[in-house]
Image 1 (spheres, helix red, strand yellow):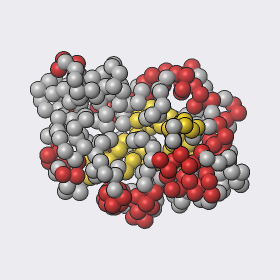
Image 2 (tube, helix red, strand yellow):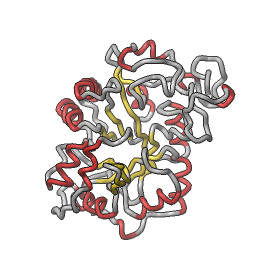
Image 3 (cartoon, one colour):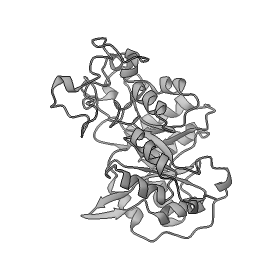
Image 4 (cartoon, helix red, strand yellow):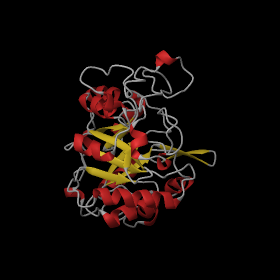
Length: 329
């Protein structure tokens, strides 16, 4: 997840509304007895972001669910990458949208990953620090049990094929740093056509742009959703439905708004979602990842934590269980 748009600050400007429980509560599979360990980008602090290697390693280490981001190439292929540009994590430059799939397949998806360090994608370290650099291109041998393709930029189709029984969260991104709505709508349309008719119920599609979520839903209405900013505001502020197909809210803990740090994920808001039959997943992009933070989220009864450190989070979950008071409807 990227930084939250300014309008998200409005979500905490009023008290939580008291609404009647949603009819879907009893049937929402995302309301769970213990919080899901959701590997954000496959666990980007522990493994190379959004690579098959990251997904395989995090699941092997007991993550419950994968979180990933998708972009669309110039030849309308859906690839898995957090940024709209190639520069931060790969040896490529420019936008995903300006490259063909064939061009992106030649890139090293782990080129700038330096494990076990703060800010794992800095570009100013010694070459030896980039442990997996060159595996994707055949210049270095892959670790046992893996192959070169596990370190390249995967397509969404490949990920879905590789993990047919793993819950996966899919975030629709834009095409340039401009973050224009038209970019999101274009990518939402391509993703919708890819997933149209797909029978899987263990997927959630989300985007910050509510219009992108709506466009996707028009094309692939059977896929579960998390709302964008607009749908979340409609629910939290207006007492309205967050939109058809919504099964969970996915929000940060806090947001810096006008010089003030606002609380978004709170015990009260999580309880509100549960009363209405929705799960609550929290992501930590702008909040410190630590055992103390994770423990607080568990005690607030969230249904999932999108963590960059799924292996470490799993260890905490083994020791700190969800309070009995968190029982969902």
